[in-house]
Length: 259
Image (tube, rainbow, N blue to C red):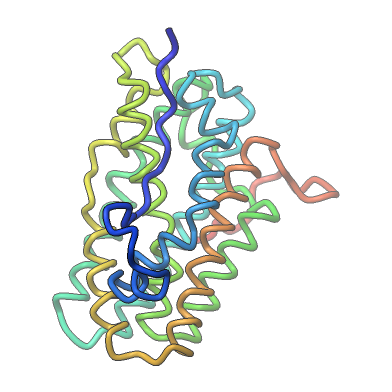
C-alpha cells in the first residue's frame, strides 16, 4: 500500500470555532498570518510533480541536472543577499545569523545537490556556471531588488519562503516516505527533513518582533514580498520540472560565473 501523502500544515484554530475571522487573526503572530495566507501556494508546491517525483524516486535525469544548474546560481545570489543583509545590521547577533547562513549554503547545502548529481550520473562541478533560466532569474531579481532597496524586515520577508518551504517539504516527505538508503533521494529527503526549524524559526521570531511596531501599510508591503517569493518558489520547481530555458536557448556556461 502506498504511503499517504503528507500535506503541509498551517497554523489553525479549529479548537476555537466561536471566534470570528478578525479575532483569530488578532491572535496570530505576523508570520503565522503570512503562512495562512500562503497556504494554497504551499499545498501546490507539495503537490508539484517534481516534489512528488522526489517522494517516488522518479525525477528524470534532465530535470535533476536543470535543478542543480539553476539552484547553484540561485544560492550564489542568496549568499550575496545575506551579505547585503549583514551590511544593514545594527548588532552582532543578527550579523552572526546571516553569517551562519552563508556558511551553511557554502558548506552544507551542497549535499542535496550531490545527491541529485549522483542519481543523474554527473559531477557537481559540471553543472556550475550556467545562466539563470527565466523563472530563476525573476526570483533572483525580486530578492536582490528587495535587498538593495529595503530594510532588514523586507529582506527577511523575501528570503523566508525558501528555507520555510524546504523545511516543510523535507519533514513531510520524511514522514510520508520514511525512505531507507535504497531510495534514490534518501540523502535529499533526510537533509531537509532532519534540519528542524533552525533558521526559519529565528527569522520568524525576528520578523514577528519587528512587526509588532509596524503599521498595517508597512506589514502589507512585507506580506507582498513574502507571497511573491512563495509564488516564485513554486515557479522554480516548475522551471526545473519543465527544463525551462530562454526561447533562444542560452545553454552555454557563462564566461564569468555569478557569485
